[in-house]
Amino acid sequence: MADQELTWQGAVARWDRRLFDVVARRHWPGADRVLPRLGRAANHGVLWGGAALGLAAFGSARARKAAVRGAASLALASATINTVGKWSVRRPRPLLDGVPAVRQLTTQPQTTSFPSGHAASAFAFTAGLAMESPGWGAVLAPVAASVAFSRVYTGVHYPSDVLAGAALGVAAGLVVDRLARDAKEARVVPGAERPAAGVPALPDGAGLTVVVNTASGTAATAGLDLLRTRLPEAEVIECTGPELPEALESAASRATVLGVCGGDGTVNAAATAALRAGLPLAVFPGGSLNHFAMDLGISGTEDTCRAVAEGHAVHIGVGRFTPGPDGGRPGYFLNNFSIGAYPELLRHRLHWAPRIGGGPAALLAAWRVLNAQRPVRLRPAGRPRSVWLLFAGNGTYHGTGPTPRRRDNLGEGLLDVRLVHGGGRPGPRLLAAALAGPLTRSPVHAATRLRSLRIDEIPPGTPFAYDGEYAKAPSGLVLESLPDALTVYRPHP
Image 1 (cartoon, one colour):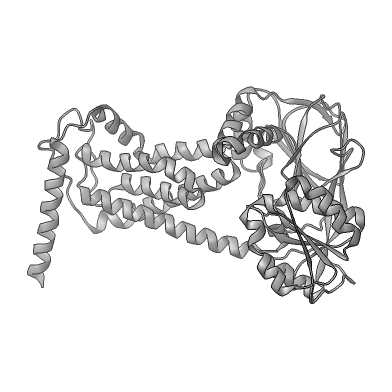
Image 2 (cartoon, rainbow, N blue to C red; image 1 turned 135 degrees about the vertical axis):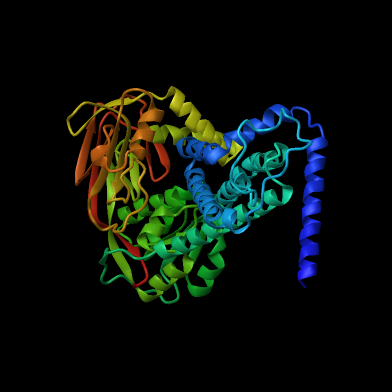
């Protein structure tokens, strides 16, 4: 057995050296200038850290989440290699015989050869990125492969070192993806909203009318079979985006309970219809993010079906802005309201996404805004301000930056108001506000919680966003929190 093991190890070593020599002897046009520099750029994860920062600054919400996954995967792979990998197999570096001097690194690595840390970092970051955003993973995969190959090309690793490092990196990405999925499932927990007494229980769904926005994508129609099975007497109306307001108004005029299936913008429209009709609302998550449903503790169609059948609901607060987007009637927000950089990002993204896709549209939108956007001069709470961003959340959000994450309680009845002050360019200001840590340390970011906020002297044509929707602001707005304004079905904890 020992002789067989030695024979196997010798065969691998011979294969390694043979392939190493093939790479050393072959001339690769243009590679002598590109690959050594690319390998140096990846030293200490700098290349991947820069990619993560770029996605965080200019990418969409999904791209930012993907960047975090990639960075976490890289950290796990690096920690594994530095604590276990490099010291468990103490393999010497290859001899540089045959490697052209133009390719060789100025300073040769002093650590052991197996496995390749550069390959592990490259594939860990790319795998973690791809688990959340396959498109960005595909974009960076050739770069990761080139970094890994550069380690053989410059003579600092054998091919098997690189293959082992790449495999370890992919494994780290899979581990982080599993942890993230477990955390996502664990975070859907009911909050402390006040239970609503006397809401109708509809065991078979009779009296429930559900409007489904098919324009929200496949997620909006995926749970319809379960809905029809669990609540067979419910009326289900499928419509597209332009038909949504009329469909909701018609459904609210005859329903006992108004139901909706779609993303956050669709849920906002349904909540507005339910508020005006005085009806309880049943939310069936059908968007890509479903911020409202997740914060409320609803993870899917099954949760809502059970709550409707059993008659369990809660009172939640709603944000209101007056005048509304139609100039007279108020508008409402279940998640958040904003003026400044984010509405402009949203406008550009909505314009370009149908033509070039969501990810590229988000990058183009960020580039346009960060290069052309100017601070908005307005008067919040009677004080003149130049702001890059004014954010008002319906309830207190976690996180100390200008783009907070989630809420524990939608029944709080307070607005979470955050300002990023103007001056200079928007990119550095927004990044400084995001990275400064606690608000008390940030010179550009302020936050408070209020029942209401008046905003005056808004320049003509200034855009604002609410729950992912986009509109032009009037010269003055009043933001208010309406405690216990809406009754929403949610399963009993």
